[in-house]
Image (cartoon, rainbow, N blue to C red; front, side, top):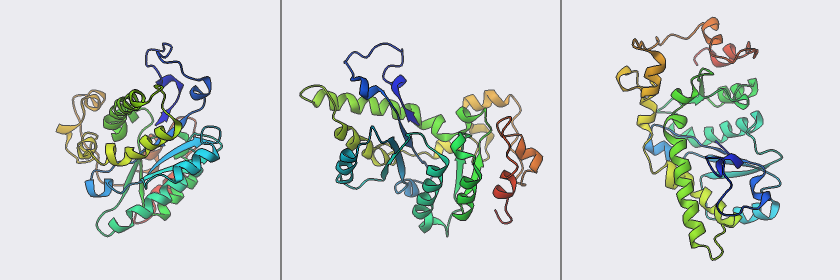
Length: 259
């Protein structure tokens, strides 16, 4: 999820409190990961990617001195998530999932953001024994559990917490360090404090068409049939990708023997 200037005010109006121009520039990308198992969720890493101008070296040192958190804060040239970042994210995720591999096969649902699609991302997941399932390009809003159940609630939670910080401040401003302290609580106080199992069943992971979310039911129409458990053919897989994007490498990387 990208937090940028347009989120200051959903109506596009000027902020009621004057905001310094430097604070409206740039963006941070929050990479959240959810699971349908509460025990796994409690230990999942999250990632905040910030550009070098917003996360100064001085602020980075201050953040490093804060109490431990499952949120990893990365200082990069760009605040956008990239394929290289995704490779690192998958490697960190694999480390945290290692104790669970004897009982579960991890499946990671990804939308078709450009950073998710390069071969290096698929190779990293294959090497980590994480199965990737890509959501068709036009169906993210109804098939991605984070979009269906998490992000809108998270934004409201963030807004309420931010307002509380501002009201508690003598000058009604929130320092960068206070904001970072709040962000570092998100994995535990927001994500781990909620059950996400219904978010997954609502997008069809349980194989029960009667409990799909309403938007997905409208998209699919009256007759909903779950797909077979057989692996898709190369032609079938090619139907989900963005048009004009060459994805010949995807099938052999995603459909390795035993995967």
